[in-house]
Each structure stands twice: as structure tokens, then as C-alpha cells.
Image 1 (cartoon, rainbow, N blue to C red):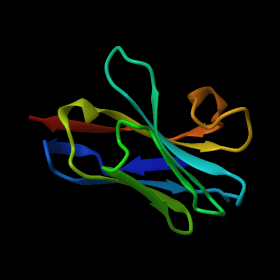
Image 2: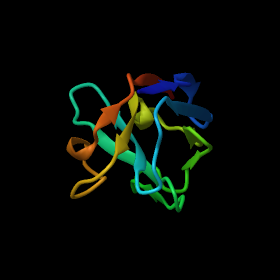
Image 3: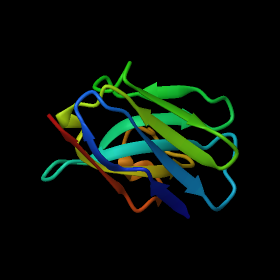
Image 4: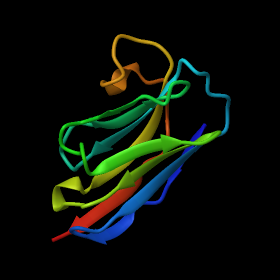
Length: 120
């Protein structure tokens, strides 16, 4: 089970940190990802971290502004220099195996989503 929190209202240029706590065990081969979905849009990849190696991956749209990290059972998405186009519901998810962790259909477990709204 994944529990996400930390969303809210922000102004352009602000920072927010999202957290996602996992209740089960995460293995070193697993990947924790963050996705976001704006109204009438598909769910898009934002960032991911390979659990064991802590290798990180980012969408081009957030590279240089967002960072992803983790501790024992929680993954964090630190968002800086927020833009109105970052407004979306953000989801964390667990990838165990599959063709690509960039696509939501390969993720096995999902958090409930947390709303991030950025005003200009």
C-alpha cells in the first residue's frame, strides 16, 4: 500500500515536497515512480528512483527543477521553481518488473494521488 501526501496550493516559483510512504517491503530491484495527471490529460511520467542503486530519472519537463529521493520506506518528490503547468494530481507508484518504468501500465501499485495547484 502506498500513501501519498504533501500536495497543496503554491504560487509560481514556490517549492513543495511530496511524500509517499510504502507499507510493504520494497526490494532493491524495484522502482518507485511519480506520475501526474492534469484534467483531460493522460497520466504522465514525472520521476523515478531505482530503490537499491538510487539511480534517478526525470521527465524533460521537470529536469533541473524536481528531485527524487528516498529513505527506508518513503519516496520524496521535491519540486522547486513550480510553474502553473505543473498543476495536476500527483501519484506515486511501484514498478516491480515490466518493459518500461516510464509508462503507468507497468506499475503494480498506486498511491491515492495528491493535488498540486500552482497559480501564476
